[in-house]
Amino acid sequence: MSKVFVQEISLFSFQQNILIFEPAKIMVGAMPVNLLPKFCNGAMDSCNGVDGNDNNVYIGSRVKCNDDFGTVRYIGEVQGYKGLWYGIEWDNESRGKHDGCLDGIQYFKTSKPSAGSFVRPNKIIPSKTCAEAIRQYYGDPEDETLAAHRRTIINEWKREMGAPFIEMVGFEKIHQKQKFDRLLEVCVHDQNVSRAGDVSSLCPNVRSLDVSRNLFSNWREVIQLSAQLPDLRDLDVSKNRMLIDAPTEILAQLSINFSKLEKINLSVCDYTWTDILKLSHLWPKIHEIIAAYNRIDEIEPPLVTLRSLSVLRLDGNPITSWSEVMNLGALNLKVLSLNDCLIAEIRFGDDWNQRVETFKNLEILFLNRNRINDWRSISELNKLSSLKKLYFLKNPIQTTEDYDTGSQLVVAKIGTLQELNGSIITGELRRGAEYDYLKRYGGEWKVAQLDFEAKAAFDAEHCRFEELIRKYGIPEDSLLVKLPKITTLTSQLLEVTLRDENGKSFKKKFPSTMAVQKLITLSQRLFSRAGNTGTPRLYVLDEQMDGAEIYLDNSMKDLAYYSIKNGDVILVKFR
Image (cartoon, rainbow, N blue to C red; front, side, top):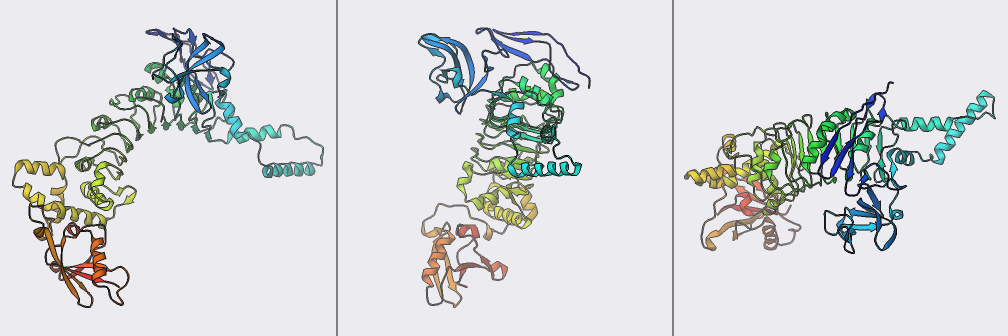
């Protein structure tokens, strides 16, 4: 296989920092690892890529001390203290002691007031290459059972060849080589990896690589790593803090080294959406991006890249406005995950009965643990023409209803849903939810028809209501949940008859907000006698359905939920 060397020299100046492009010298097969910039800090006169000591530590290096990660901001002496010191800006601010200023001397400057401290070089855990980590993690001696089995096979070969003293030269090396060649998935999570090393000669067939929570300080090493794995499809670089130290044009040229990459995990990398867009030039065929728990709060529309993206996970980012999410609407997303964000409401526009042109292919949406506090936001999701699965848990609006009632409202408001929080929505469940929705808001709908502004407000809040009326018709007035009126307490009570199977009956008055469970408890007390044991079941006689018995099957619901009205008879059955 021929080797191709690309030489390109350019010079870019950014204030006091300089990006130096040097001739590329790394080659894997016929794929050049194009020139990558080195980041120089003019103030310290230390260059990224130049060893500051025997541990490959330089200004900008990522280091680990005990279980704390940080970035080297200074290497040198500290006045009043002997020897060499590293000035570290720690990821966890509580690990630090100052901002890089000690005894009145500013050695370096941290981004947070007390994130810095000085440590001795011998306190830093030595880093290693990815190749070394793979060899250590996957190259351990086999267990005794397999080793004994292999020795048995070798001894059988010797007997068959009639040469008991023959030495199987190179057998172990061949075995180890075959073992690494078979590796398709590699995980070296939290192994203090800071450089690529020679991975191509070790395990060139890897398709999935996890190098999360390591010590990569820039994308140069990751690109060199990917260049050695021509069949790489899945890459996890989460929990690394890597400088993006190359212009967009250079990153686009380097995309040849990610030509088959389909999925990448960039979670907890301290990136903004602008950073993600810049890096996206590296991944021409990317299908899934996981960028959870970063610093993404503003989102600009991707204009050039991400055309093949179908899955985007932005969980845990400080996104507050749905308008920012709308900037992703032109992408061909099928899955969008926004769990644990700060979204308070969802709005697509003022036209309540029109599908939106954005997110045309979106089928699955995650909105768990946001700050959504109005049911109109759920109605707005009905404007997504392809939405099939919704995950919507632990939002403030859900505290206004019990889980079952809240779920029924979501199902009734979004006509395309097939699953809610992982549960399949059957045809029967949908019919029940939609009809109960009509009964609950039918009275309000009738009143709203008398006033233009009231009707507009109702339509925006219940954008499917007209559709459901066409589907089922408006329920009779007797079935509608009555609108609250200012009346005396006595007139708010429902007079119903409780009757057991033996004909014994009591007339009682109850508020419509009374829970079925309380009525069950009262019935046990009223009809207690020999033979009536256990918890009774309650049934309301529906006169409009020729006396059909409707089971009050949910003890947490109130009487109004079952449309119980004055004069109704409730049967109490103990068996």
